[in-house]
Amino acid sequence: MPRHSDACNLFNSGDHHVLKHRLDVLGGHCETEGRDLDSPHRTVLSSLHLTRDGARREEPEPRSAVERFARPAELGIDEVIANSPVVSEPKVFELFAQVAQGSAAVVPAVRTP
Image 1 (cartoon, rainbow, N blue to C red):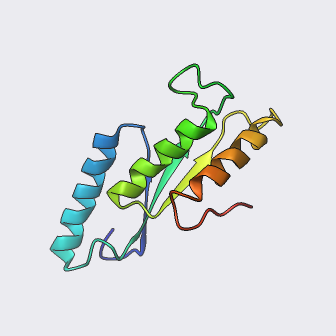
Image 2: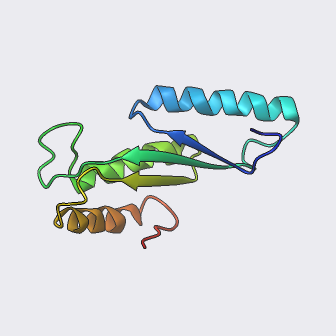
């Protein structure tokens, strides 16, 4: 990847240590190629099933989702791409709007469609 690409998309399993390991591996490949680790744009794809109350860990409420998105940024991820398995529920978009508002304090820019 470091020799031929300007971007790298990783899948977020939710395990901070796994993501850190993947970035360490990427860093090793960049070093082998004589490339700065900060030069490829690093993204993470994350599936997010938001709920109003966050009663289950795998289904956070908006504030917890913002905190979850801050962790990859701390590791050097440039962008988190989130999808939702419940787009058929219109109210979920209100929850994503709350995540976008809360993320403004965490990331330099939150892009919304």
